[in-house]
Length: 149
Image 1 (spheres, rainbow, N blue to C red):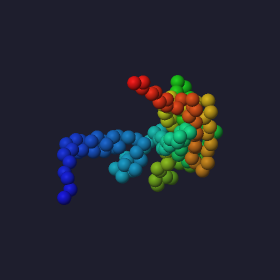
Image 2: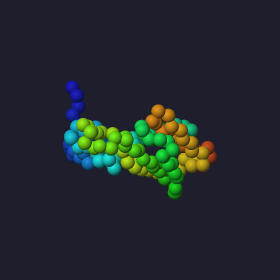
Image 3: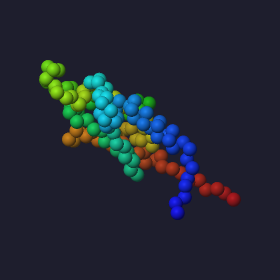
Image 4: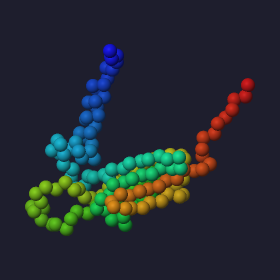
């Protein structure tokens, strides 16, 4: 027979997550299901961050964005990715029956780990995915300290 675990805040936590998704303009799946569509000024590319033993890898979805229109900067250990996506050349707004692909400027910022080697960051773009490689410092590995008895 299964054991029952009393968790009084599960319902409240679920409500908090649902409200967060409802008010998050970047959560397009929830917004489209609820009939809310982002304006042309509010879009944010989705990012996956992977940590490896050698560093970090960011995969940024930027379909339709020319890599020449993307700026990657680091200031005070904060990685900023900014750029813009322009809309199609169709100028007559009345001609659109449905418009889901948003355009405009975007900015994503990430605080880097103290282990990040900001001097050797590289980036490349392929098929609408920007890949940013951030290596780790070799000399900042954890140090084990022995306790004398």
